[in-house]
Length: 66
Image 1: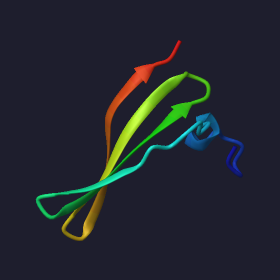
Image 2: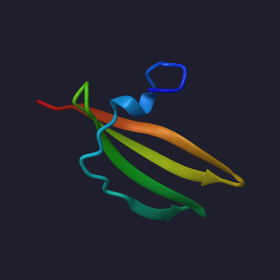
Image 3: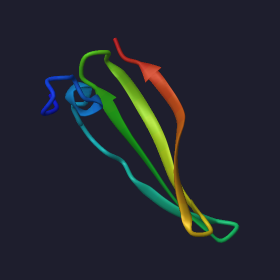
Image 4: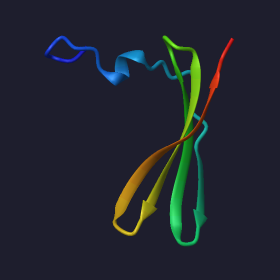
């Protein structure tokens, strides 16, 4: 929880594993990683990539776990 007592995004994350993969596409460095949401049992996959001097984080997919 945050200092204000509100629940933060990180309170719902429980990292079971991270599988990073670095690659370069058209001179842009990219990093893909995945993590599991503890409460919702969802596997999220994100991509961080660099465009010029700016980094972006994009959700590229998610899967419900049983």
